Length: 465
Image (cartoon, rainbow, N blue to C red; front, side, top):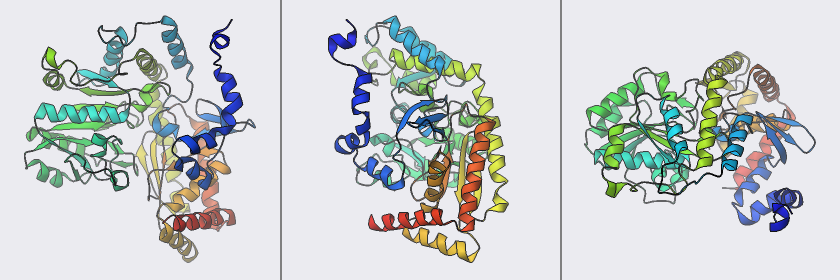
């Protein structure tokens, strides 16, 4: 008798019998606005399987993934090395999460992670990026004995209460006050940073080397100058590498693009999971950890029930091994340079295309007001209804016409963010650029289907107000 027969549970049969109800189940029991939104923008696809940088639907058509689960799928989907590691760790039957022993896998993963950040000494493992940020906020406050953390306007650091307090987007914060007493400063504005530091109550600045919203990089020299200011005022630099870390920007960590930057705390997650088991990590300097865990009485002052679990640690170790074996950091840099160059070369051709920016395989394509009268009137119509609709107008035919999954980089932004799996190469660059060129040709030629969809979005935007 099989396990399925003895328990009555058969996952394959359950999916076969009920998988077709996916959107109805979500609407009834989960966030009901998600299926509504997907139906509205035509993203209510049914993907049957995935591998690497591609999905396939029930008809066997492939879809190129240029979103990577918002950066989680750095290795693509179902990488064989990570799959094997998870099979191996499950088959090993380890005595996991006893809470009163020290298993080897967390120490081994910490050792491998810290090898990529030689100025940091210790790691706390949690379960997500937002938990890594929460850890860094707590550690910074305790280590400095100061209450306030600075963050940058338009930043995104997570959605739990502490991380939300350093979230630079009002749309996420509205209705959840009171939050922690933190303060926003403009990204790149050293004078504003110093003005806040002079008040003497700042524990840290938390900053993304490249902001996910809008794909905006810190100006050259900013991180190093900010670090020096912070240390002068006995405050810490926290680098949020949840999206930019693990090779995304063509360096292992995004802050390493700038010489001399040595954050006191670094937050990572997403791609470290290998796309399978959630894992977050806060890397930090030895003195900070020793101040937080200052005695045996404080041994559990900060912990996580599922932190350091064997499956997550195995996935992380396998991910780092693949990163090194396949040289994915350098590959992300090369492929990212090629993709940005190909897209930037289109700018003289399309008046709606205003900027191509980013680093490695984190790329922003920004659209802006055209100069010709016909296009300007259509652009104005969209902007009057809701800023960001033109970018959505480009995203939709990329999916429907060319089977390429992308998305806008934030609410009310005319920016598409490309964060594909780090394993893509020239064939995927060629496919995306050809598709993007076709869609932009349509937009500039006044193609009926594109702008008719725009009118539909305008009506929906107005109706939702």
